[in-house]
Image (cartoon, rainbow, N blue to C red; front, side, top):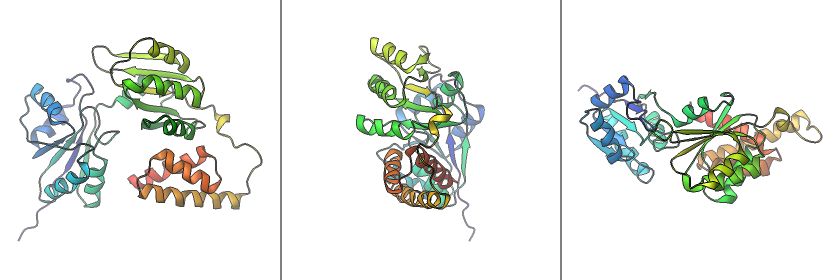
Length: 296
């Protein structure tokens, strides 16, 4: 009996606004796969209709991904090919799909990215701020206390910060950024690639005034200046090397436990900083390193 070779999971980036912002390769993959797993099948059908692509669709969103991922992995193991798409941009990047990708990798199934649009990248390169190093935060927590703690955790990072925000929270988020980070340079991108595309460049205080003056509309991507290099330097007396290494080892152990239980980054950093006595910016760098290791 011949063994069935597993199919391939394609991660297909789709337009973030303009329906013509899609690669020829992405269109070919969407035509050829067995099934398309879409965040919102109604939204994806509009894209497919625009390009004349008939396809079988199934839903994969934040509320059903845990249950749906094993089903899709089973189909892949049976030899079917699947394209994963989100409503806009690159799937699994602040969109559903991360759990499915991990399950496919663990099952030894080929996972192939089909690069394309990303609001994160588009806003970053248009911001006028340094494009490296950069830290992507995704969406900040909706609750103010948690949001402030998340911002505090990255306050001393000398990295450009990129994050997404919903229109109904943009004013509150800008107010908290000003409080937690200070009056830094910022680029606020709205409706990127759409008819009413706008990129506001200025200071956080100016952005807060601008978007408080009129009801904000559309999806927002914010690119924020990193902390000055001297802001990340340790304060007070230096810690002996052996003690510092012990503290970092303890912090990594706490972070690994938090990573295993899928704790939010700000919560993981808070726990590890409290347990080890390290500053939060140093713990956050350890957290980023562990996330990168886990993704390999």
